[in-house]
Length: 441
Image (cartoon, rainbow, N blue to C red):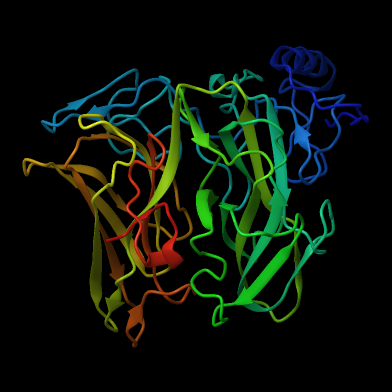
């Protein structure tokens, strides 16, 4: 049963107030205590208003099925000797807390992970049957902001974007809406037209751009790789089909740019129909001004050197030697998660840590499914001199050679790796237009 959503003067930011209202609502509207607004993927408890582009909303209540359980606690680490030791975690072999991958010890809160929501739809916090219990990992969230695709290049526009036939990359530009320094704690895909959206990537943008701008280019356009990717852009996080909500573990927040910085949400659209389509998908960014002790960032690992012959199986590999910028001589890098990304011919991704003394430890060894690109818990500690080699496997079912490229009919080999301290993994080169948070050598 849906309750009427009434206007509000301000967003609710108090977790206790949200919980109390949820319980009151549950008494009159059913056992789950949750209401969904008209916007896909947004849960609203009265008296909050429906979220709008760039407008803060309070943390959503939980209790809906089809969600990802939280990651929290201390990550399991692999020390310099290569021995695996677990922190506050679930038992080895339990499903990963985000993505549900049954690979190795799972960092975070004990308990089973609920299955991710339907591909192309956002998963809501809370496990199925939780009866509205809040996700402990969301307790620190103060404010959430929506950044959605829009049709007109003006700030605050709420019209839908017109997606033409074929493939293109479109960047939607926003001025960071927070007014004080923040960390990111949860990121949620806001689904609209799943039939045309391939993936999105959220960047900070240092080039001079206007709030509300819309940048579109074709795959063979003059602006280069990923159309907008350049030294002015730094990846924050992303989404592809199969990935659910992304929560940071307790004690860690994701780096977000300073107030007033421009943000770019880059959508890869693939409209295989002959007619125009409409889309208003987006990302919900949930933040806190009360910084957790550790700040993480994401780094591109893998390679762009791909060449797979027709009707053959092939591999491509790249090795990352972290620069460890700003770190002490003996400080470790703490890897948290891996998010593999390939296209339709990709079948497997493996990342192996080679220790300074020569020993090797597997960080991730997983089959890849283009339609279910899940995030994996890969808790590893990197010491000075350690390197990560990422190998992608492809099965070319076409008659022609396939190489690296932006199109879904070409291939990629990336392991988007989240780690703290922020940017410790980075070792940028000429790839991706000289973007700073890469390590693709």
